[in-house]
Length: 427
Image (tube, rainbow, N blue to C red; front, side):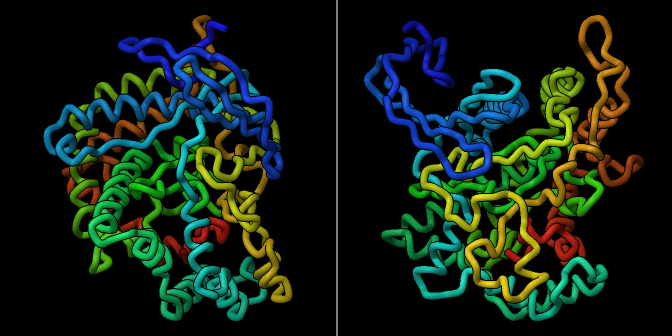
């Protein structure tokens, strides 16, 4: 067979070709029933992939290409290269508009898994915060925004939220390894926070953020919610630029602060992106205006459910196998404690694409959506972020001031309290 292993092609190296396939295939239990398959390369190594059907991965592939460009830019800057700042990537190979292969990222667990496993190992309830919310109100949907803010603050005051922090400490063989993992975790989280904001990446619940077990770096999966689709959603629009909840912040510094490595890294990442905005805009323009980029938004009412641990190592626990939050645990207290107590996710309805649907009526003879007002709006919005006019079109902000405002928005209780509960803002 003369086909290369997907995602391994390098013009400077000998091509690794597919030698054979492992005859056994593992089927995941999630809705789309993805398959775990293994290929044997001509170099003798084994390569593992997730074969996904009923899902369009072309946008994920484009995002990975953009991440490659950003990594190149970070490698060319002295300050970011010295700290080895980069986005963790994995191969995405669309086979058709409804199927594709995703590289299996080894030795990774979702942060949700890490938290749940830590609580179970220490005989703690895995749904403490949900129980607190249920004790405040039997029906979260009926609460006003002010009541939700009060409920959110109550949970914050009566829970520690340090499970991830403690898990990272207990899982490290010594203090030196812990410090290295903590630094890698903080830097990789900062880089992806800034890049995700520029791209308008949403749906960043903790099941979509993986953590490498050996080095602490984070890996983001399920990249379909780009261009602020989550912000424009009709029901429960996202109100934060990136995830910076308490559970994510506490492991970053000994003093549980984002004023150190996180902010320093975020400032440098934003500076590099803004100084190279022409290169970024050239790449982004190519697939913002490309009609194929409307794949995710022109589909009919159809649930596109990402698989658990799509790019991770271990199988996700049963309570996080679905990405659709179940209201049962809050609306009916008797449901608390069941295995389906919560299904992390930020999509409250199956018709999420309606608020961001791009029509194909303005495609010209070259196949470009040159007259599509939504595509133009997306392009303009991204440009404003890269020049610092995203908050006020008349007052360009310095990169450090822009990052400061973004952190303020991401940590504001008023914003977190009104987020979709499946996003787990209380984590």
